[in-house]
Image (cartoon, rainbow over all chains, first blue to last red):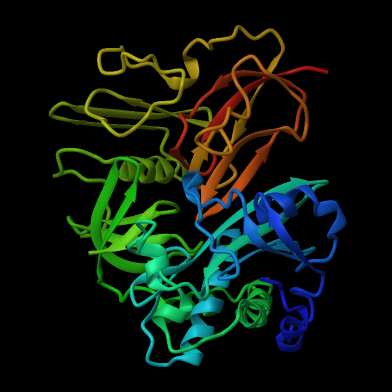
Length: 261
Length: 172
């Protein structure tokens, strides 16, 4: 399925994000491609979109299933002359962006964020984010990779044994194209990124909190063999997970999977 | 109950231990000892720069840095920094410390080779490891030329800000 650049650009309202744009029919991973071609993409907000990823990756090299024409797969390059104080927040922004977009198009859809940055609709994962920080010549570039399930049917996932995954079309009343979804995400993301450059971290935490678990919600945090159960407390200063464990002690985590129990 | 250093609990977990270390690191305390049943923890700051942790048994989750021998439970407690290094250094030794809190990874993915091994030569700009925080994979690069003498953290273990990751013998 071809990429409709006209439709994408028509809906894009950003100043920087996505203005330097390329579409690749097939690539091993958009993050890798962008990392290796950084030198050609000197503008912040450079974007690469793939029709198909041969080795899309999640955490722990979990593969990201993509359906050609139905999955939106892209990576955005971010760098700033201003020091980014809390880079962990960078990966929250695209998740908040998508959640906002979905909520604005279907106010009755059940949109939620799973810490730190999985986007869920109807309790099923519809988007995942994985980012890389690269140092070079004394400054840091961030490559933020996003995969969004746009128009698959629920069957497309259950057939692959993915019972916790779904798509925008399957879980909401909105029927956008990949191009529209991407333009809308970038429109939101750029304004959130500007908030971050202005160190408005509390504002970003509040936005995340609109879609995150309720304070006090019972959660389980898992990382390898380490399992902690407790109650969700909120996001910490750096965006880390704050929870009260079963003994009532405050714990904080910077990585791992979190599920509602 | 707030997370005070526990007196009535029988066992510290990893996170609490890390918090304790951080608190002590930031405080003027130079020595701290906690003994309780089968648990003994001694933390001493050698000079003002490093914090050494000695943990006698019952620390199931805490993977001691590489210098701790594999027979951890029976091994006599010894300051981590004072243990002999696997590769005998001849030049200047420097430490590379974690610039952030997160999970330490030695390789870009579970099925690939580690970025560096003990004995490897490194140059400025060489990626040594990744620290992941909030699904952001932060590459940690060497800033010096030299050789890896010791890798202080096991793969996929949490690291604290300032924790020593590598010892490097510098050259040139």
